[in-house]
Length: 149
Image 1: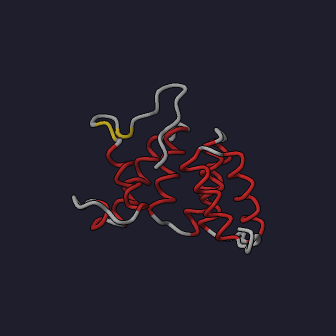
Image 2: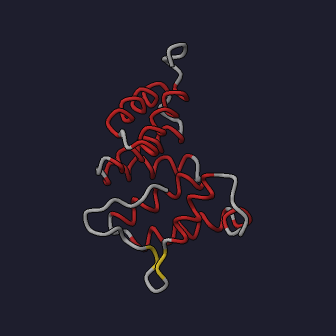
């Protein structure tokens, strides 16, 4: 970081790591905001901003960013974040539809019994596996956050 303080990709990676793995959401948001200011059309950075907002409990704000990121780049990790956010907001039908769409886009890697080497595909598998047989995805218990995908 010291050598490249204005590298948007590096700032985004650091911010995402801090929010996703270390629960340092406020610190992460600062790095991601800086990255987004430098590269406002990056689907990866927009997704990171949506995910950190989700982790901070701003689900409506997260939804706006995640919808935009998915429109720009409909890839599995963004889809998994958007599915969880929609579900958390009570948009269950929309979450199920997006989950099925994302699974259909990557059927060979997502439905494989072998461990996936791609964390994005792992995220979709995790989202798929959280579905309850009769109702689809399970909601987190009241007061608990949905585990990160």
